[in-house]
Image (cartoon, rainbow, N blue to C red; front, side):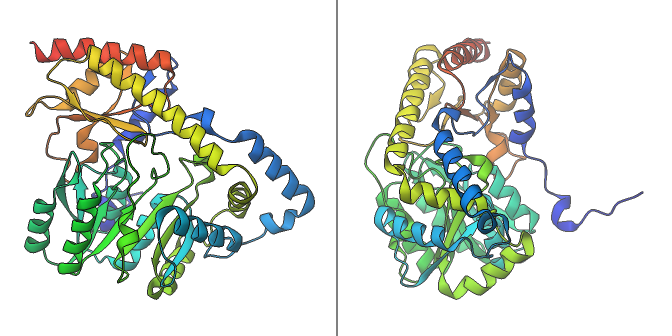
Length: 397
């Protein structure tokens, strides 16, 4: 049988990360390449207790079809939470529960983007959303990321030079893959530029509650006065990724379109897990859980950074994240990280080459992403030691 692949999917390549993830099946492989939260942060006992209680007392409520918009109590809980924690007003905004944060990107693109339209994106950026945008035939234009967030001068150039820009994609807090946090000043400037050129912003914030150092910075959505910002979050990094639950906030004017787009995709997200999330948020010590999770990542991140400082070649640079799950290291300019990562895999350590996160994957990258949330302390020490020795071999040839 000869299959004719659709134009939308013909140019979309599989995620390098998902392919490399298969290497983690090897028990001897040290995995710095994934983005999984640490299993020690999962509230297993509480999830078991909540599940047992609802299945015994009211099973039909969580086993029957649910609303496309999401489980009403959870939606209301999240609105109150986001108002209090992030400063997001719901006077003119609505919130939908979605099947993971990436579905928010899918729905927004489905509703707002036509084939050939331009999406501006931080470069590098999260490959999952980049591939989602590609699957709708969007043209991606990358804007470089600096140590304090997106380069606003390059952003304005891109806004001037490109027609049919539908939105800017940004992860301002603990960006994936770089771990960088956009400053408050830049967030304000980004919002003002998008106002000036009448462009929407898709703000992706899956790691926002995982700050373990530095000062908290409000999301761009908190600045939004004209319905310009679509804001996405996830329960994957703070509860359990297998729940496949997230949320998306947008101007009420888009409610009908976003709801229909959701119905066309999966009707509704799993009701049982929405119920568990709501119960945990309202009747358990969610604040204490987040505090413990932050401490786990602070310790793991410090360990990885300390080992990198001691063992990496001096020409290898890296940022110091204030939260999230990732640190990105950089070989000297002009040195392609892909063969370096391949050699690391041969020696038992895998990370992700920077090209996986590029708006234009045909352009080599000198960066590689390392994850500290999943590996054990012993694996972090051993893995960085292996990569450190490799860096000296690689850069002193």
